[in-house]
Amino acid sequence: MSRRGAPPGERARVAAVLLVALNLRGAIAAVGPVLPELRSDLALSATTAGLLTALPVLCFAALAPAAAWVGRRLGTGAALLGSLVALAAGTALRVLDGASVLLAGTFVVGAAMTVGNVLLPVVVKGGFGPRAGAVTGLYTAALAAGAALTAALSAPVAELGGWRLGLAVWAPLPLLAAAVWMAVGRSTPGADGRPEPVPAPPGSAALRVWRAPVAWAVSVVLALQSALYYALTTWLPSLLTEDLALTAGTAALAASAFQVLGIPGAVAVPALLGRWRSQVGLAIAVAAGWAVVPAGLLLWPAAWPAWVVIGGLAQGAGISLAFALVVLRSADDEVVRRVSGMSQLVGYSVGAAAPLAVGGLYAVTGGWGAPLLLLVGVAVALGVAGSVAGRPAVLGGARAGQP
Image (cartoon, rainbow, N blue to C red; front, side, top):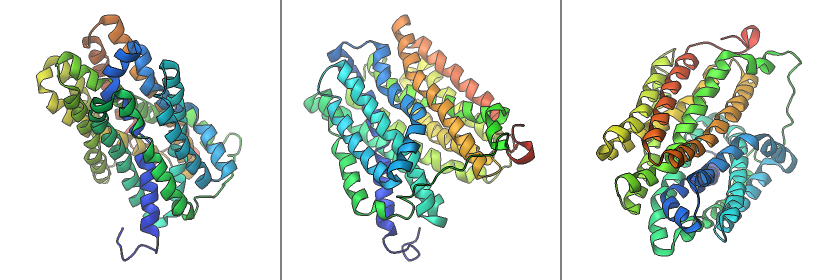
């Protein structure tokens, strides 16, 4: 967006949107770097520790309809403001006691992030007109940047004041976003709109996406992408410190690099999508990149910097491709909305289960070999699903529900 072409005040509104987005993944990514110390202090099992990442992601799936309802009742701007305050409260309160309080605060964090996930795209679409695409790109990059920031700095802060400080130090960031949002964000056109959904006619094409193989393929792509991302976001620092005896600071740096490299990975995909009618080759390439990471950590762990770089690029490209497939496989806005809702419900449900599955498998086997083999299998399945979802079929109209 050029400075000359932007309407007055638009840059401030973009800044407000980006500050909100900066907070929508950071509190999750902050957990991994301090997880070894946290588990030791609270005597958490590996499965319970996996809930600290799984629970917010499960909220993304289960609470999305409730978040949309809150947005309609309160107005989008007011709901986003309330979610930022709740996010700050959950981030601070989850460290004040033992495991039960930690999990309760984590639930509040996940619920607050869900409101942002659901409503911030509404603000972008309604408030920036022809610039919505560019703002969406910036906002997606801000998600990765927020995760990278907390992944990089939580461990060094924890070395100074313990894991509780390493997590709670991020509580002021959503309050800053709330202050900026109050000042300029709520003035964004569409930020306080309360659009009522228009139900599709009974038996319409949009209502049949749950029976469409292509819609399922798109949903499975997001599900397996989410499973790989959240499993590695949670457990990569623990694996590096336990198996390779890296310091907590070095493991945190690796986790941060994994998040930061998602930005160029995500930016590369839109440019590649315009080159081919089919996305099968790109989907298989993303899946291959993902497969290299657990396979490399299993077979040649000393080369972990290379696997972190490849994984970072793969996770950014994977999430960008998963969201793009929703649009590319849909004939119109109504089908996009239906397929998006289906894919997020399926995708984030599976994504929430992945850290638990990896933690449980580690607890049962006592090592990282079986969990890494599981992730290789997930990456292979991602390639299979991507080879179906990447075919140039369209859902909608007379062909809805058909591949």
